[in-house]
Picture (cartoon, helix red, strand yellow):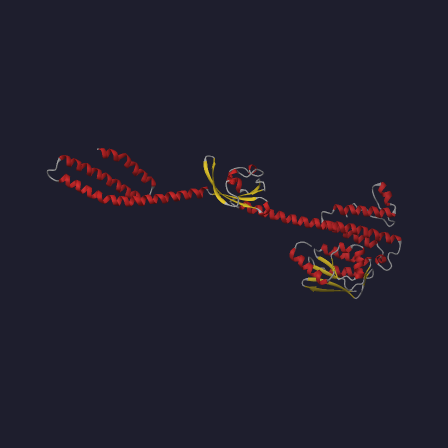
Length: 122
Length: 318
């Protein structure tokens, strides 16, 4: 599993590559790498477009990552989930707890817009 | 989670200080239900603080996900056993409850944000109103004074409590709605002049009344008018004294000739003397008036006129 980090208009985009499943085998490594990549007080989009499946460990990594971002004062959104991943998130209602967008570009735009209108709130 | 959620041991039994609750939580399904209940109560208590609620929700989510077997979320195979299925159901139940509470907390947070903005706007407006020298009365649709700034009671010479919640002072109603006018009123024996401006608020929501104390300005205007009138009087006096002086000089000259001429009737000489003395008095008055015109003081004019009133008849009769 590789976590590719890029910058899109001031927003850090993290993209999972090299695997189509985030499960017990790689969830911990993903979480560790992603937490390291979160900038303090910055904006982050996690691109889930490369994944077809997540198990409870993978979803747990998403929750842990979201917690870490909040702790660092960063704003984090998940985006681009394929139907297999989206259905899991919807099954356990996580799509109503975490911030999830359909597209990476849309998520980045929303984060920038929120930064512009409300710079103090994470 | 701070103390309200009790850890479940490996067999699913919760440790609880209450013996009855401990008995119930010893049954695995009930233990899970009790936990869901306790967590639910915890979340409800944190509902008014979105950050605290999210912290609790994420922590509980993470814990429940960690307890869930990996394949439980695989839509093709589903939970491997009844225990995993129960844990998944409990997770979904918790998540549904948490999501609803989070949405309510977000709405409450947004409302608090708007409320803070309104409070800031209110404070700003109060600051602006307070800084204004003019008095401001905000009237309700029924003409009651709802609010006023600091200047209003000060201008009217009354306490704020005597103004707010009471009908608008009578003198305001003397001014037609949507217009500006000066109103004079008696305050402790002296006259106060107020400039009153009445403006209606939109949709019949009342009225704003602006009050400015223009008493000093009014007095200044009156003083200016008085000075202008005095100036006209002085100019007239100047012209008059010039016009009187010429014939007066001729009169005095003729009287002197009559007095000096040999063989003139003594009665004529006496009359000529009276004429000359009177003419001299008039000349004196003219000189004094000329001085007044130069200095331009009303008091001096009054003094000259008083002197002339006192002196003239007696002189005339003599």
